[in-house]
Length: 489
Length: 113
Image (cartoon, rainbow over all chains, first blue to last red; front, side, top):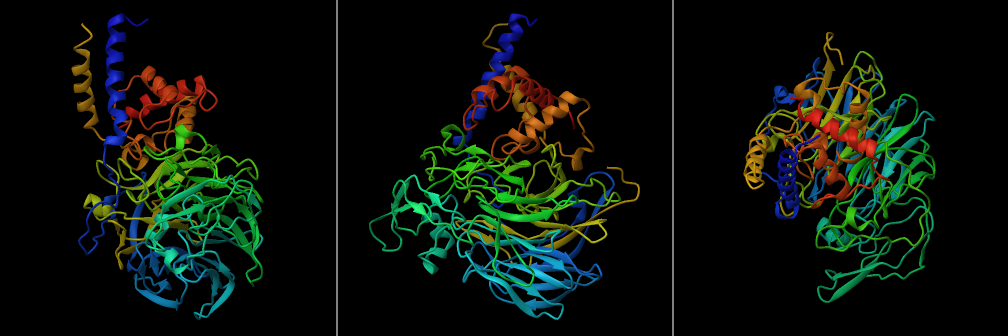
């Protein structure tokens, strides 16, 4: 039994700690991108920590906004370069082959950036062409570089784009389609992205009919330059909605996983109610998993404190966007209300289903993106998901007290336990540019080679945060992680 | 000991311990598998409910936990009542048994370095 003086001492300690931890509102943001960068980017594999028995090497550097990696029948690595980055940086999207000495050979150069990922299937590459300007596509690139459209006119001209793809056990091409907005309502934050000036009529499209609650938001009006505009959910900027209003669903839609035959045709719905389903991968048992980039604290309907999510994909399921996070209703004012701003509430009058539970909940603003599953006992951790965490884009997405992400994590998809796998050394976490080392910057994708013995990590490169994102061309890197023969994970 | 001196003592302890790194990831400290079923449960509860704001017990959206000597009963109070930007977790979200496990896990995690 505790003696009174121990109780008093502990109580005092608790009060002090509680009061200190209550100071979130008073502390400034310390995101990983909130630092400067002076080129060139230096590289030092020793700056990256791995579990005992593993090593990391640089395979290629000087990549231009790289986003994905895939391997041909001979095991050669190919990388997609996006051609577009937040911050309205436009370059040429490309597919390049990484030669054994690290040189890059262009296979194809195209249009419709950002090219967000690549998969290889029966002699061809399938690329998610994000389509920020003119709509998203899935394209097929032959070994000679010939580009063929598999599906086009995907609703990608907003905040989030066409992502993936992954080839299913059924031979179909699965891909993610992100939403136009953060939380269903076009607002001033979208004008900061730049797209409403190009596509003023664009907005989110549900996959099935939805009925609105009539929640509207009034902001200044950057279209007219004067006065105010009132905007509801699933409608263009400046359009008000009313309770009971039905928005007709259609396919293709936003916030969904879709699939299409490799030869083309109409896309089919796999799952919906997602926000930005970025990474897609099939586990060794054939189950599809997706990484979901969760809400930001921005725009007309900011949402606080929502970690990125790893979901086990159930066919036809609705995952909760724009009214739920990881199964929790946004109507819970205490959990999701940003300080000094209204609670998000519900924009839907009724919900299409009960959102399935997450397989794992990852860091808030971690931007948990590309993933793959270990398959070879020689590498270890068979059945675990490895996820690339791009890292926060604070303060634009919301405040963080310390950098979040900027590493590769390993997830047990049955227990939801998350463990760091590749992180930068140092007293605190963060990208190499912030830590002043030659380690990881912004991992955006991971993929095992066909033998399953090497995990390749696509590092997007330096992206610092000012009033808008500041991507730095030519700073991308392809890393490779292997396990030494005496390693014992 | 009177109640008043507890505060500066607590502050001193806090400042000293908060100077230490909160990093406890396997790449940095080696394997850290929870040694028994209760701690393993605590790890699962933590990763499903807490880690999104305190990744691995480090600072992220919220403050670091691994380098602060918060007693278990204070953790329980904080989980049940919330504090500052942290929401409260009801018994529907985290049971008493799970709170016991997760607080034990956090104490164990703090000592892994």
